[in-house]
Image (cartoon, rainbow, N blue to C red; front, side, top):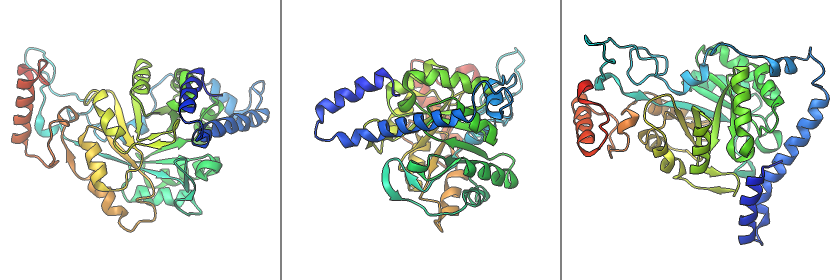
Length: 371
């Protein structure tokens, strides 16, 4: 079940709050239930059956990088070879063969908007957030309005979804967009769940560091072997450091502490400084984001995108909310902590900010040769 590390961490908390045991039971109960469900499910798909599609998916070794649809959707400059903020930037080499020059005028980012499709929430047990019959229609509507990706929540007890909805969403999204990504979210505790995601045709999965603990690296490696992209959900500095040590490149930074059952509205903003600026890492913020102002604050802190749930599903203002995030240019992530509130900034002002940052820093953001 949960790792020894988690048991120790929760044990110390329980000693401090002996009269409030229920607040810590949710993650134990959910994890134990999911282990039992997967144990029963695997009886229908024994590893000895080499013709089983799930076993084939588990044993398949993906030799290429694949389409990387999720990464490209979550960082909207990811596949732009002409944008210095993208990792595929192929600018002209200088006469001396030096790296391409940095151009502040073209390095601005645009935020990614991710819709979290779910009827219920782990952080609000027993409360119905949104009633809908067809998750595929919801996903199709959200992508048509401009969402870059959708998260499909599968666990029925906690989120009110199931695997059939994932397949329906994949089909619906592919119909309206060749670039929008579909991401599976479940309480992943068994690698056969990765095979289910692969078999359903989704682009990536969410691995919760708080649930997997010391087993996280094994699941990260399995995703890489299968050619399945992953977002690693983190909440604490220790979880961030551990994931960075595992060479994780896609992070979902949550304001919600699953182990303690607590919501910390500024946690993602506080952790933003642990990630380097524009580069190979993709960072998405999630947890209680219900207004454009909240989303803009997180994008300004350097995040590539935000996850929004009930604030847009069934909301008449959803198109406005989505466009306010997607259509505004953002400063490069490297200068996101300079206290600039206005995201619409002239190039001359940006160049001045970079000069000021270089003067105040022992390690200039950009060298004189490239400024």
